[in-house]
View 1 (cartoon, helix red, strand yellow):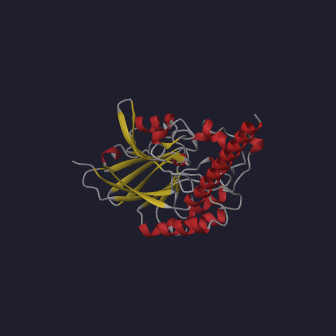
View 2 (view 1 turned 120 degrees about the horizontal axis):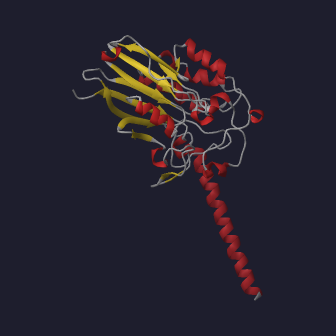
View 3 (view 1 turned 135 degrees about the vertical axis):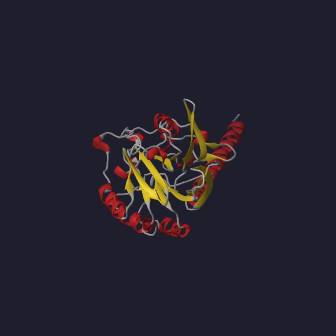
Length: 312
C-alpha cells in the first residue's frame, strides 16, 4: 500500500512538473511572438469603375508602453509603404506615460492623410485583473471610480495637427484626386459610446460623383456593423479583438471580446445584413495589454489594403 502511494505521488509530481514546464515554455513563446510584427496584404475591389488604386494602411490596438523600442521602430518603418491613407481604429495606449512614445513612433506616418476613432484604451488605462476572465466573454466596462484616465486629449490634438480626422460619431468627406472619400465612424462601442452619424451631407447631386463610403469602429459589435452595412458602407474597418491574442494553431481565436463570431476575429470577411453586404477588415492589432503581454499563434499586424476599382 505504501509503495503504491509513493508511486502515485511520484507520478503526480512528474505530471505537475511537466505541466509547469509546458506553461513556462508557452509564456516564453508568447513573449517572443508579441514582437514578431507582420504586415498583412489585402486587395478589395470597392472603388468606382476606372478609379486608381488607393493604398490604405490599417493600424489598430497599438497599446503603447514606454520603452517598447522594437514596436516603435517597426511603426516608424511602416511609412516606407507610402500609404495614400492611414486608418487608425483605436486602443493606442496602455500606460499613462505612453503618449510621447506613441506620437514619436507614429510621426513618419502622420505625414500622410489619416482618419481615426478611439478605443477604451485611448481613454482609460488597463488594470491588472485575472487574465482567464478574458475567456469568459466580453470584458465589462469599469465603473468611473475604477478608471485610470489617459491623456487622450493631447494625443487627439497631435493627430489633428497632423491633419488626421477624428470620426468619433462624426462623418466627413475628403477629396482624393477625382474621387471623394466619404467617411463615417463611431466612438468606442465597447464602452457604449457609439452613435452613428450617417454619411456626410453634400450637394443634391453629390451621390452621383465618384465616391467610396468608408466606415470605422474600434470594436466590431454586430449592431454597429449592421448599421454601417444597412447605410451602404463600401468597406468597414475595426480592431479590438487582437485576433483572439491567444489562439489554437489550426483552429484560431477562442474569443473576440465582443459579440463578433470568433472566426471573424482577424482578417477580411464579408458582413451581411438585410440583403446588403460590405467587406469587413478586422485587424489582429499590434500590441497587447501590458498586463497580458503575450501572443500565441496570432502575430501582431498592420494591414496594407489596396482598394481597387470594381468592374464596370
